[in-house]
Length: 278
Image 1 (tube, rainbow, N blue to C red):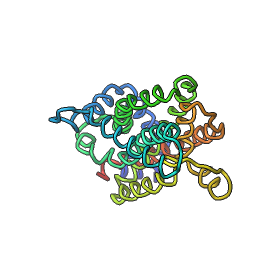
Image 2: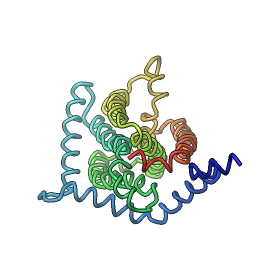
Image 3: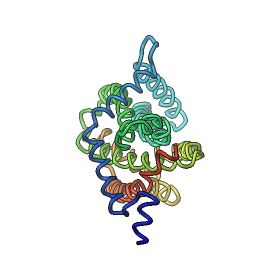
Image 4: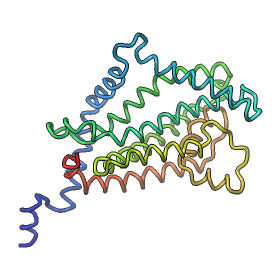
């Protein structure tokens, strides 16, 4: 009797039913992946609508940043430009993807509030929209990556399959983090500011610009327990012809499984309330 009254008041049929609906949402979003791609592409194009160069500004602005920081850190660290510029270029490009997917994840549901409240589209559609939008941006930056690898000769010794594996594991991890920030930001509007501050702090604690000269003592702890270091190392080291730490791939794989399990469980419990949060 109490169960029937609870269902009548809340419309819920139990956690098992909520899990089934969440899985159905995930599957439906996969079937509508083309819609997510279209929304992501529209976001990028509309951002540069009316400009002469259009999305080419993405590549140009990143190229100027890479050159400026590459030359600066080469002088500051007294390391040759041949060694510094490729390291910095790959670090900035892939850090941009990592940070933007997480930061923009905060606005995933907030910006899509009208569509969520007026349509029956799967909620995960907008999560993939955020991820795919930044993959499009990464696609523009591939020009920089290819140019650096060819000019400095790394294309001869790079391990592309291992780098692709590292990128896949990284995307798997930042996707669940993006979903987590989307859910919490829909409920608490202070979260975007907190996430932005954390990512800014993490950028300086991660070897994006600077090269770790030592892996002992405090630096060893900082790098070992910094998930962003493992993400960058799993992608950047193979492209530079270096042997990445196998532990990085193991850590990223465990993080992906545990992270997605915990975040999906949160989604199961909050899925009905997301629209009301908005």
